[in-house]
Length: 231
Image 1 (cartoon, rainbow, N blue to C red):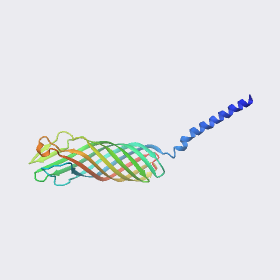
Image 2: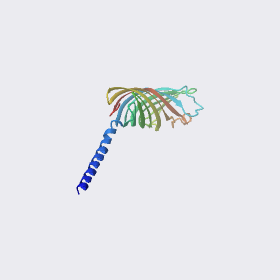
Image 3: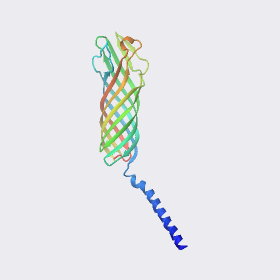
Image 4: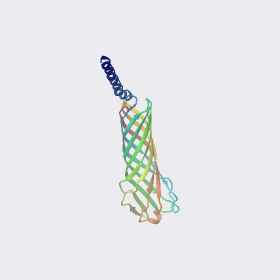
């Protein structure tokens, strides 16, 4: 009977040791696999270059027109540390943007003035290597204000509804300046492209039929970043 009792005590001790090991494993792994919230607020400022899509045979643009761009955005997602040097984030992105451009056509007295406020919704995977980071934002841009005014033969033709949704891509390269272990100011460059600027106007169907443009974006971006176990 004594042997059986001692055997039961040994089994209990083994169970306790195994349970302790199981409970201790997550605590040992957690500092190695860093993870947590990743959040940023960013302000991009730059310019865009309008690029015609397809063939516009009758009225040629005088050139690729440059426009001003600005806005503010946020990113919120999940951060995962891979090593002391490399980590990743998966962010949902939301932003407000403003841009304005003017397009003049040769051989005809006509100007397009495109001015729009837009909301964007997207997703961005991001890779951090030391203090540098690279990200690719993909999403939809939704104009929220009437965008297009056409000046033709001394008369203005203004659209009374927002433009159509557009697809966009945006590549971002940042350098992070840490002022706390989990906070940084990121200074970087962006390069993007969005397409779907349809400039058709019902008052001038013969002139604007089939008109479509894309926009090549480039500029600088400053952001405040917070992430738990950021480095």
